[in-house]
Length: 129
Image (tube, rainbow, N blue to C red; front, side):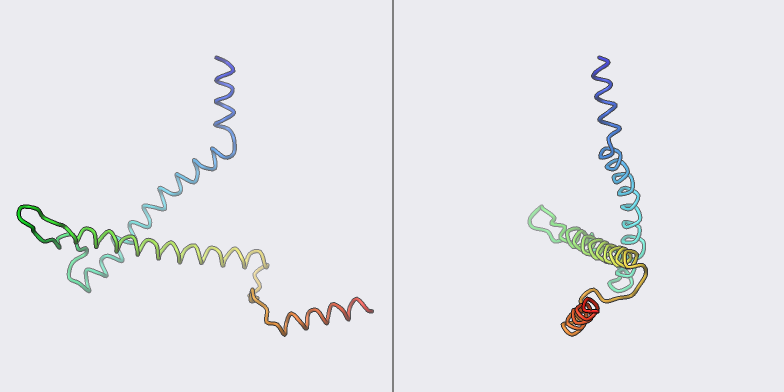
């Protein structure tokens, strides 16, 4: 029994499990922020344009069945808005990381052929001296 508890404690205390727990908690909090952005800001802009904050009421009836295609449209719109928001946030984060690694310099990642050639010539001349 003691060995089982020790193994369990070792498992829980491994860095991967703690990192995962932190990621899940941050993910839940971030989900609330993104949902608020979508529902309270962006979908309200859609409400101004289309007259309602979502498309949930759009439906048609076949015999006794009601097909709520508006709910699907709302889900697709939410997905696209959330995906675009995450894309912008991730791109901004990546750019911030690049600048941090470069020491804050605003240098272009891709150098032109001329710059590469001139750098090689400079390095060759430096080595000759």
